[in-house]
Image (cartoon, rainbow, N blue to C red; front, side, top):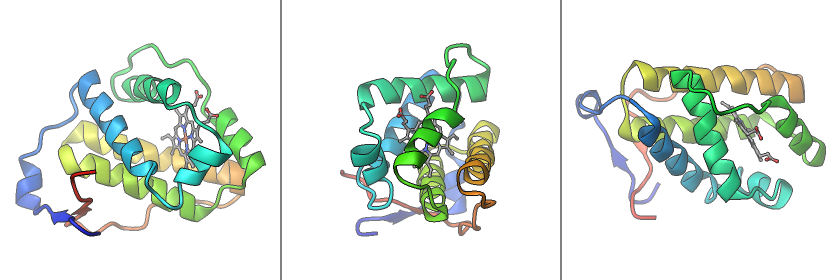
Length: 155
Ligand code: HEM
């Protein structure tokens, strides 16, 4: 992608792990900044779901703080909202591929460590559950290159 930078494994080894809510906030905001410009995903969050970002982003921060740190706060159910979207427009494997790719890139750009790894593996597991429940098809991440291309800065 234009303006993209490569990060070597050495450089990535110096990145910190995700340690608290402020990091989760930054991760979630980075991720959705990519989603809103993405050709595959932006229509789903925009025209189809008409997501209210002021509501959605704090909810997702709560969700990931529960997953990663066991914080109380998120009390939703994850399948139902995705079922609702699926009834409006069917999910496809390509959407899960893209979602996971952007999530992985958002992680790799700034974090490295066991908690970042859990954020990635949890996402892969939920993507598979959602894919099976919504499309009837198993989903698993295709291998990303170890030297991950990080999207350009400056948006
Ligand atoms: C193809 C992939 C995905 C797409 C297109 C997608 C899309 C969406 C959309 C449009 C919403 C808003 C629904 C609404 O408020 O009406 C939503 C909610 C949410 N998504 Fe996803 N999603 C995907 C995968 C995932 C995965 C893999 C996870 C977890 C790792 C996840 C976690 C959540 C959570 C926690 C919510 C909030 C649910 C609630 O209202 O409590 N999503 N998603």
